[in-house]
Image (cartoon, rainbow, N blue to C red):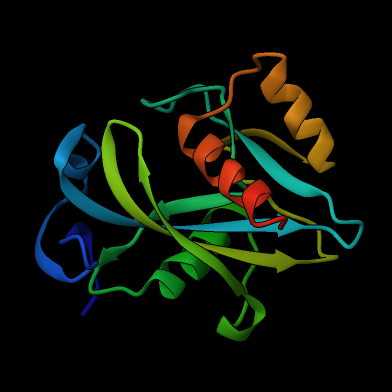
Amino acid sequence: MVDSEFVDVVNEKDEVIGKIPWREADKPSKERITRAAVVLVFNPKGELFLQKRSRNKIHYPLHWTDSVSGWVDSGETYLEAALREMEEEIGLKREPEDLELLFKIMVETGKREFVCVYRLVTYDPLKLNRAEIEEGRFFKIGEIQQMIDAGEKISPFFLEIFKKCLQKQI
């Protein structure tokens, strides 16, 4: 059963060992490991959609970040979380087979998270959730690298994901 008020705590093998309130999971911790899901949304031209986080976000307001991301709720799978977050943040409702799992990575940015990163290619228009997203647009991969090199505000979480994408030539 999914419990949206809690997230699972996992061990180094990504096995569930407990759960905590999601607000607690947002606090820095080097010991605790939680789970998150990311969807990288591409258009047919190969451009990647990035969102600029809302100015009202506690962490990294007005920073560019991945297309869609969020906690995996307690009892939920990575894929279920990816589909839920995609609908909540950018208004796209999809089936599990529409997402391609690219990789799983441990991201450490003050807290530790196992992150499953998925890809979606879509022609469909996005409906941005303005409570979460200040703005968003599609970028060529080279443009994203230029933004990083120029010191644009980009979330450390996305920097780790993007670095892995470049290594894997995604």
